[in-house]
Structures are given as structure tokens and as C-alpha cells.
Length: 385
Image 1: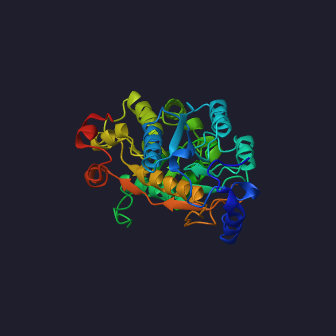
Image 2 (image 1 turned 60 degrees about the vertical axis):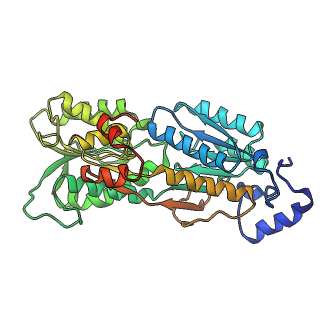
Image 3 (image 1 turned 180 degrees about the horizontal axis):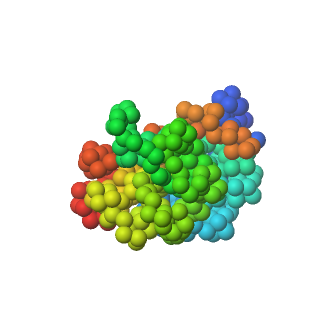
């Protein structure tokens, strides 16, 4: 099928050029092998953007930012949210392909559920960009834009230690803090490839403290499959925390900290803890709870001394990078990667661009979130975007 931005006379030369630069496109087909040359009118190009859900403000912001960035370059954008429903997302991507998308940017719900869609994309030389969540078990993934997900986990584990007073802000052990301290572990959704990286990164920091007895996971629940939270559900996290409190802490034992990989999960955990009379703030005895994504509701909790920390992944940068990658594919160029070793999706190592993250405690809200324009002071105070 001829892509609508093909320069027919130059097709042979373009294919040779792409082969020379090693720009493996979609599957074995080499991506948008006919879609380069810089001769296309951007308004003739459609980019399909598939986002997982509108139940998280993070994904709403991602979708808007990607759409705006692409439209600023003159491209048409087909942005779809799938409501965390896998069949809906597969149908949306099928529709994008059949309606003539030239590039796909996909933040998958289940990174293993899109094999047939990616095969269809490859058959039509449509490059596929995995957005923040790696699409697994398919050779037809051309590029991956994300944050350094293992580093995110390291930051979360470090934030838990710092919040509990075991290390200071520079990572140096604080003298005189006595263990054992009880903690519990939560992980993200098992169908999200990132969740394993987050958990492994955090455990690389926490495991030495568990091994030497400073930290104790009193429930004994330490393996990823046991502590994972399907679909990153706040409600499921709250229910599991309630069950842990009943089964493990009804003897009066003190829970000092909880590793949480996502702000929504953190809020579920905090609701469960406050529901049994803990807190209501850290100063009043609420356990230290980590987080991720700097969602405004959790930023307010951090500002109010309820949640301890979150990891700030500036999704504006992620959106900008995905736009750059899409534009490179449209032009028949090889996107810039800064990691070509880490992200093996089971079929291939996917070239990736990794972005850095920041840890946010209460004192970091203004310099990292307000001064950068990510949130306003009024939003921090209200907890409403």
C-alpha cells in the first residue's frame, strides 16, 4: 500500500538511504520505508495517538501535550483514550490503521495485547512508537520513548529511606536511627512492562536494609506478583492495604513506611491507613508513603504533610520527545536513541530515548513544580488541576 506522503520517483533511493542508516522501521519492513524525503505537506500526514485512560490526570495531560506538539508542526492527529479497556484500545488502533494513520504513538494498556495490530501496521509500513509503556512480544515496535524506569524505582526506594529518616537528602546514613522498622511493598500493574523496572529499582535500594534487618516486610509479601496492583487501581490498593492492616498489624505493630509506585495507589493506601485511625498526617504518626507522577491531588497531600514524596516525570518532555521521533519517521530519518541495550521486549531490543526524573518532597514543590509551570500555587493549595 502506497503511503500518501510517498515521493514515488524517489522511493528506491529512500529505501536505500534508510537501509544505510540502519533505521529499522516497523518489523522487518524497516518502518516507513516510503515515507520520507521531506516533500510531504504536513497537513497530509495523520498521526494516531492511543492513550490508555482518562481516569488519570497524567494520561490526559500526555494526550493533550502530544496532540498539541504534533498539530504545531501541521500534522493531523487522531487522539483516542481507551478507558483502561483492552478491547477498546485494540479497536481504536485498528481504526487508526484502516483510516490511514501514517505513524502510531501508543501508550498501551496491556503491553502484550497488540500483536495483531502491530502486524497490520508493519504490513502497511506504519512506524510504531511505544509511549512510556513498552509493547512486548512483537518485532514490530520501532522506537520507545520513556523515562529511565529503573532509575524511577531507585528514586522511590531512596525516597522511602529518606522519608523514614534512615538516610539524609544526600544519601548518607543517619546515625542513631534504630531498626527494625516495618514496611510494606506495593508494585504497579503486572501487564505494564514499566512496573517491573520500578519494583526492581526500588528493591535494589531496599533489599540491603531488609537483609541486615533494618527493614522488615512484616506481611512477608515481597515478590512482584504478590504485591502488584492490576491496572494501577487506587481501589485495589486501598483494599489490599486494608487487608494487610487486618491480617498483619491488628496486633498493634507499627507500620513505618509503604513503597508505592504511583500517586493513585498512594492515595488508596493513605485512605486505608487513615481509615483505621493512623495519622492523619506524617507528623501525627501516618506511615511514610512514596508515589509517582506528581498528580495534583498527591502534590497537595505532600504539601499538607500527608504523603511523603512523589517522583516527577515531566511528561511535557516525554511528549516533546515522542513528537521528535514521529517527525523523524515522517521524514525518513533515524530517530535519536540514547539507549539501545536495555529494553528487550521479548522479540527485539527496542531503540529507546530515556528521560530523567526528579524526587519531590514538600520543599521541592515550588522549585520543581510551580516555578517550572507544571502546576500553579493555587492548584497545589486546592489539589485540583
